[in-house]
Image (cartoon, rainbow, N blue to C red; front, side, top):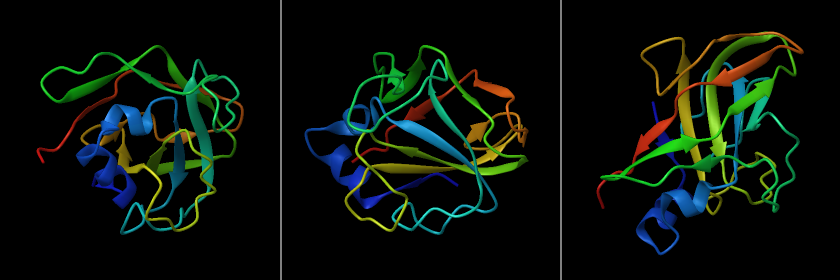
Length: 149
């Protein structure tokens, strides 16, 4: 189930918007069941960090952060190649899209986060779920329709 953090909800309702809050951020792919809230601390084993072209990312910089194409009718879609190299062996169960700010994964009601269930098909984020250390995984599709205010 898609879960928006308090910080992301506030950004959508404010001047930053969804794209502004998550532009140049990352997606962490994790094992297990997603937390009950995107404000909660991350759980499960970190399997990989999705970046632009799978490159190294430093919070607060634009280098290799994920980008979006122009929004249309409230829907945003990915721009560029989004990929990661497996950091551990495991089965992906959920993912957290984090904004460009430093986010250590602890509990926060101010950081922009979007939690998503992961599966091969029929989930919030459809992707290969068997992750192996050193293997590259590419996210072919990503779209999100911003909820009506």
